Length: 461
Image (cartoon, rainbow, N blue to C red; front, side):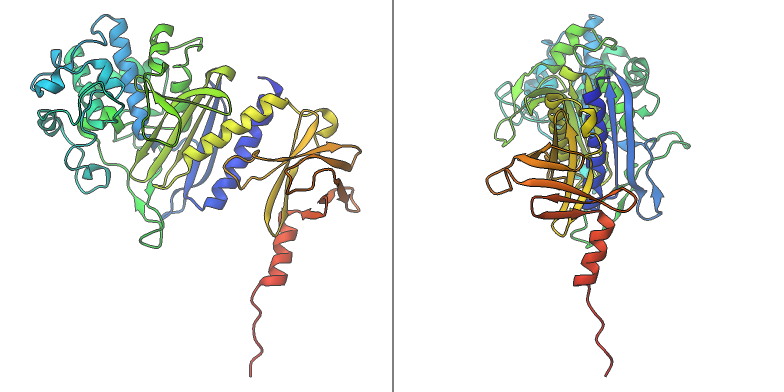
């Protein structure tokens, strides 16, 4: 692994832990793979707030719509085996559909361009007001016409991937969960992933959680309800490490994969732009894609009642990142984006020079934290409170053991001013002066804030 990447992963995990604590969420797991191998796993918080069970990297989560990528890989494998073609109409395999639905192609359903209903007339299955649809109920809704004209725009559909599950069953003659587990999950070598609940009794399972509002406290959402016919769209359960492993092997430049390079290129190719969105992103065949910090990426996200998850693969540096959170307002998408900005910053500047390596640490003022991050020939003062900690960050040129100069800063900051470190009697750095700003260790600032601002008891009368 390149030295810059090792430093970048270390700071990414440190930053996500800081963000996690500040967000006061129940739990979070991050897993990072490099060239398909897990190189970092960290778990923060709790698997269940009611019991106080601590979260570990081995806890399983509902990874929700990541399931679509597993189903898409299954379709591509059947295509490689010449058992279907992407331009085949789905009605060729699944009977009893509305004629308009039956005429849509496998490729259109995979790319969410078939015009199908998203979740039917009642999507209460996603808020626990009704069970997930069974096969009979799903087929009943697929006997209705498409919601819009097929092949006109990207329109997400969980029903569509439920339909692909029925198609896999029709082609293979086996239940979806049996075939997909053997041909995709086991073939990739995943040992902590299953298509649906229940999971093994000895496998730890992270419970979901609600928002704090409107109940004014987080409540546990069990998350153990079966997804029935919607399993191909939303049912999978797995660890962050397994999810990262699966997506890593979908990269077109991966050395080992359950699919051919041609199939992986087709899956990850941009098929449709996501319309009416503030984010520039595209969708392929069961795969999301975009560009962040100048890097092309692909992956998927997931939202299940009580869980938010996100995975991103950056083929240019052979890195895959998965973040799983067990609350309905989880910050996984923001942390994935922030991680990409962090990796890009380190890749651009490189690992720190030896003389700068001790210019590091988290320093505090009453305004919050400042992270000193040595990179290349400079020390960057980042803001870990931000979604991108390197945004408009100040750069410090180190001129001596404990002295430096602000070499680059925004017009509102202290460009050109001096930086210095103060050491205690034991020779340990106790303070950092960034121009006129005196930053200290967290405990020292916490004590000072308490002394100055904590309410004082009034003397008894």
